[in-house]
Image 1 (cartoon, rainbow, N blue to C red):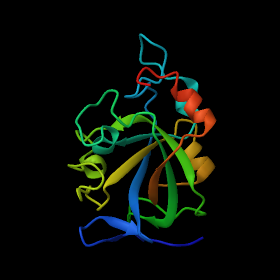
Image 2: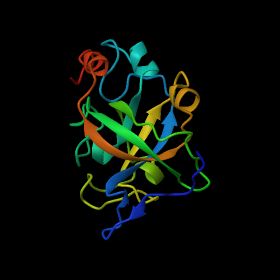
Image 3: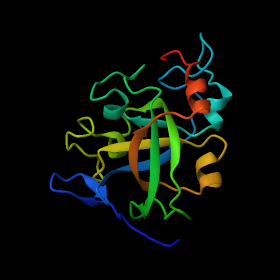
Length: 181
């Protein structure tokens, strides 16, 4: 599947949408910590293995804490989001995905504004028309510790539509182990 550039277009309030659905930018990371939702054994910073191996995400600050500024146990810790590729990406910063198959990610971490202004610098929660440097109200930094994003999904900083969904049993059960559940 060959597409390109940003397929999500700004609506009247400047928020990018695709076929009427809100869009999100994505990147990937690998930090080896338990994350801002406390998904690791108590008393340390070591993550649970599933937090490094599953489809988990660090959400932009204003989504992570539903408009607030908490960087620990944000109000959207443990939420699941369905990310559906549009076929687009931010020019020069990614490439088109090989298919448009949706994937469900569990929010286990925060992408704070500080140090991540380009992607996670939204000034308000989704629905407030506050966007990052690329025009997205939400950003998801996807855990790629074992190549689950780049190698398995073949996603390289793609553009997606996004929606909150119920967590599948495995992700819901995993999240119950986290300190912030």
